Length: 199
Image 1 (cartoon, rainbow, N blue to C red):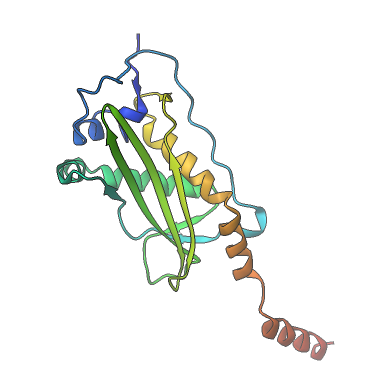
Image 2 (image 1 turned 90 degrees about the vertical axis):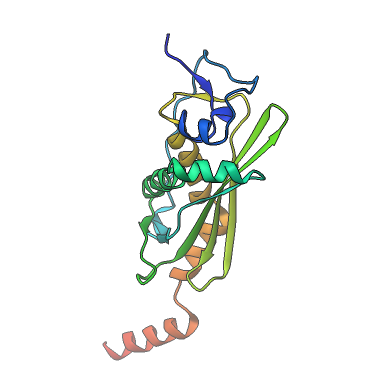
């Protein structure tokens, strides 16, 4: 029988973050049971598809135990999560870049918050979004549902697909992108004048 672990305890990827967060003794570990498939990523509306999002930094790990952060960094958990989130956002219809000098609509700051309460581990995957000039746009958080199981190699994809869907369907994000693509009154008037002149 294939081994399964409860992803809320395994955390980010079975083996790596499991070891990084030193949770192998938790009583909630479950090694058998049915699993939930990785969901598809919902796409941006067609009129804002192709919006450019900058991910220039690896995710931070928010925890009260500095040793957790050190171990996770040694195991390259932030880099692996960033790669998975980049792929998920592309599936959502974004163009993802990592070069700050290139034009972009949004800046994403990723994080994982891990909180231990006795034997229970709570994980929240975070994507803070600002405009290119630093204006806050939205804070998107997705918490791993307690009791949810996935295949051992699907933890990253399960988390990032859900988080990317939250980003792509956020009304604040969609409204921001539509406002950026809508011509200003001055630009619209100028375009009208040029159109009249060309007739």
